Image 1 (tube, rainbow, N blue to C red):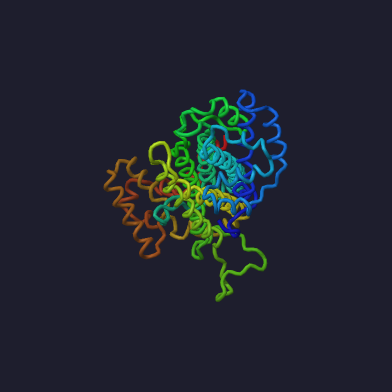
Image 2: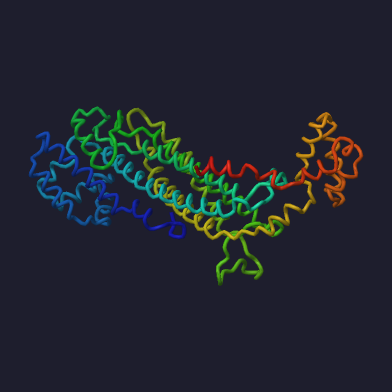
Length: 433
């Protein structure tokens, strides 16, 4: 997590100040519940809120204490006691460190999810706008990087819209799965703290109680969360890669916006490189790379160990901050993307009608020619286009075996571009409703 690829709102979630404030709220809400149960005095719970709530926690001081205690939660509680005074003895009653750490992580991940969901919404809005703008902009579809059949640029963007809509649904479910609270004490049995305390804290923090926490919240929840971020990152890379290919000089059907004063190369002044989408490809690799250690965190020893802790201290901030930045950057790319319909038309016709080969093939089979023979007839004419630069339509019209099965009018009709776009409205209705 470096400033170059970070945005302030997401970074703030992972700051030490935010973390300690959440820790305090967990402890204070637990004290409220303990006071209701008569375990601690109500005045003590009130004092904890008043003095702790007004405290400005000193991160350096807590770090200094931790260098001695070698325990972060104890260091925080020691520092908190300096503000609260004698009533601090009622803080952390019946709780264990994981109650604070895991519940705090749940709060941070749910807050991060909300930012990421807003990011996806912004991206979806940009994709929808540009998709309708280019719904009827005909372009060549490619398979294996080779010309296949015509589609529209709007359909390409509609596909991306549908994909990120699925990403959003997955993230909603992942957020729900991660939003659990554990205030169950050592080994998760509630031996020294009532389940009501967990229920109360969960409600106050917008979480739900973990059914069985075994002292830590089960890490399959976290594994699914980070795996979901990895899938979203993969979708970011998919669209970024498409744009990179379309920006290649010999294609140039779409291009990242090139701002005034921007430079593409230190050596070659003519360069306009797809730097943003290349950057997105790299960032996606990082986010995906954080899914595997999250999965490896699932297998902990017995009721608890801390082999997961160091991993999560890194991937929690890094994955969410990086994906937040990537989604915002991709939205900007889509929003300002330069689209060149003239080049799309030029590339579509580069091989002089070759993209209509399937329609001719099907027409021949419907006219009574075997599929094997029809394929052979169409392919032999198509190869002349590839190898000699011939015109596909003219070659077909000059092939006696083809004209024996199809009239000139029937052959010419198979070169109508509108045939390929007749269901675009249906696709858009399915995608956008």
